[in-house]
Image 1: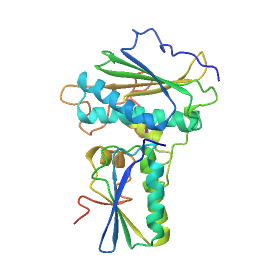
Image 2: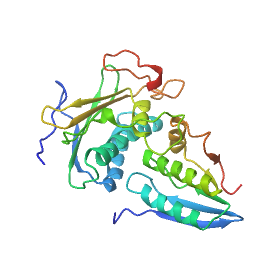
Image 3: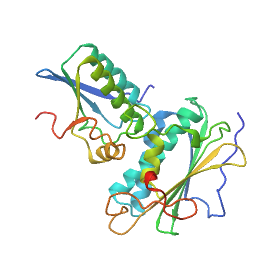
Image 4: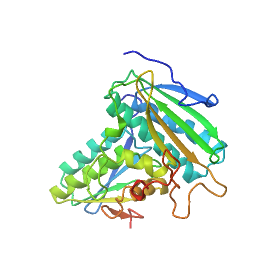
Length: 110
Length: 176
């Protein structure tokens, strides 16, 4: 929707494609992340890293987008890694029991 | 579509804040900012504020997606009150005027099943002390959320709210 777009930075680190969204991810913005993940997967990287260091808030639609992204990556033979979660976002992953489903790293540069 | 203004769910004092928003996802951020400020001023810690915001945000998202089917011109009312009974905290009432929408029928997935969706209801119940849907006499639904604030934080040692059900008893474990 106009006026509510989200910046998603991108960089390559070795064989990894790093996506770094900026800002809250909620119902208005999760479709943008979903489209960007699909587009990135289409380039067939070995690994997609979603750097959430600049995402202070995520709701269930954002989590669902990442779950869907994980499933698409698994089918395509691509690894999906989530990194640098804010405490509030991490707590949502914990409540949803998703911390053992995703590969989560504290520092995406490590 | 007929509309009617919100009414208190029971005999309570008028809300301290009452806002009406259109059913547009881009407005969710503004509501989060309002809740953040209100909750901070009555003493909620950062974690408690975050959980309250998550619960209300999920409620609004459910109404926009499932109640109004993404129609951007429907109305949602929020009423905020400070409560002192049974404990100091916040009561939020979220009301819509979609008569066909029954949130109790929303899908709630088994957390052991890894698939997108079905998390919203679980998140709401997990982070609040009361989460109850009511039918409005005027049509539509009212969601009543209560979250308590305690000295030194508003979560127990496990980090989860001590929930209660409508009759005040402890809830079953699966509702967290």
